[in-house]
Amino acid sequence: MKQNILREIYLSGAQVVRYAPSPTGFVHIGGLYQSLICKKIAKQTGGVFYVRIEDTDQKREVENGVEGILKALEDYDVSPDETLGINGEDKGNYGSYLQSKRKDIYQSYAKKLIEEGKAYPCFCSQEELNKIREDQEKAKERTGYFGKWTKCRNMPVDMAYEKIKNGDKYIIRLKSPGNPDKKIKHKDVVKGNIDFPENDQDIVIIKSDGLPTYHFAHAIDDHLMHTTLVTRGDEWVASVPLHLQLFYILGFKAPKYAHTAPLMKQEGESKRKLSKRKDAEAAVSYYKEEGIPREAVMEYLMNIANSNFEMWRKQNPDKDMMTEFDFQLNKMGVSGALFDMVKMLDVSKIVISRYSAEEVYNNVYKWAGEFDSELKEMLDNKEYSLKVLGIERGNTKPRKDIAKWSDVKYIINYMYDEKFLNSNINYEYQKINDKNEISKIVKTYFEKYYNENDDKQTWFDKMKDMAEEFGYAREVKEFKLNPENYPGHVGDISTVIRVAITGRCNTPDLYEILKVLGKESIEKRVMKIK
Image 1: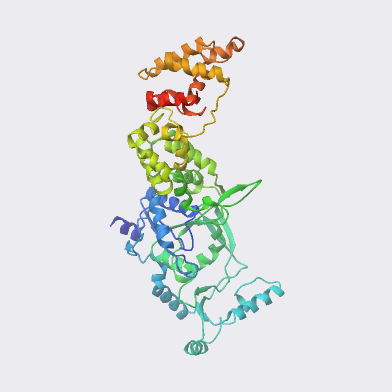
Image 2: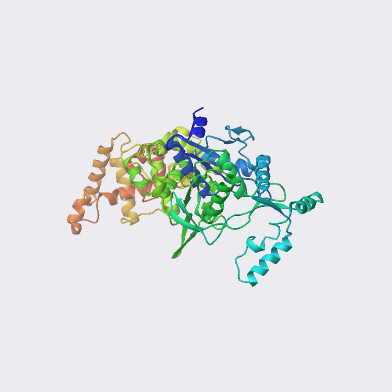
């Protein structure tokens, strides 16, 4: 009921926004970006977000294209308030939300325009249209169907009727009243004031198959569905004069337009649009396959949309961006927004660092079930895996080494004896790399200092004691003050133990690792390096 009221009386500030994709290929990350903006605007203003599937170009439609779009929006938690359901039913009172099912509506409006002398049937063949273009190019004129080049514009009604009656193929064209010598002024919500020449092209509004063109259908649908704001990529800016003209000719009030900058990718010294053809990350499916959490993807997209979001998130790490962040269209950049996967992965590390061990486990296990059977088998021991994933989690400075679920197997596999003990390890010893000294340090630690029941402070104090026994500085700062007095410091000693137990010099907290591994596992690992 609330949504219907919003539609009918346009409550102050409430926006009815839509995402209108075509099911002609995989779901592009730019589509998810637009959906996030629409969802945020609707939620922030108390309005409505709906999805309309624009499937009038049926030659290019791919199998399961509609289902793929709706599933992607669901997966990334930007499901619309109204749309076409997965099973084809309408979820809302302004359907159908599938344009191919609205054919009669478009034809009714086209008929009305013909009756009013604002549209006409055109019988030009493709060969005739090609000839018109060739003549225009020879004359160095603009190309298109306009002015003196419109062969069918002034055809008598009786002649047109006879042609249709005889079965001649035809389309319906708009009879444009525009004059390109005149300017229209338009205020775009993102780009500000823009001047355009009026449109004078007699564009096609109904194709030979009886379906509408995008231009005609979108004007009718946005009116009937009470759209107040259209957000779309700025490749549509050039269409504004035509679209405003269509609204005017149809007798409709035009919505506001917000043309957003495209997502760009750095390539050498220049930038280019993120490409479906060239860039794996252009496909929304890429993020699921890599195991980048949806929260990370959406937070990064919000960061691109409003540059002040990054600072807001730092100041409000636990708040819900969809309900708390004040998104502003007029703060969007007007030039291409740089899409940086390195930055996205940094955002993802921060997002994952806020997860509990249980949340990480559930997400990784679900991902591994679909994409990595070896990792899934490792995680089947849930109790142990929760301990592994819980290392340095929940602290004031939690670990930030996981950027995506596909990273997890490498990050944790040394914690599993069946992986560690059966592998050929290239031990990454650092400053202390003499084999005899390493062997002596490891043996001394586990025979004299190691106690699995020690608390962290006791454990660290013992590590300092052992450093002192071997002639190393107890404190790093002590070594830095007098480096000539010591071969190294306690950190170098602990690195030997770390590498001996894990095979790596960079790991999360060593004390926690030792606690999770336990005495039996540690003894097996010590035997491996002898």
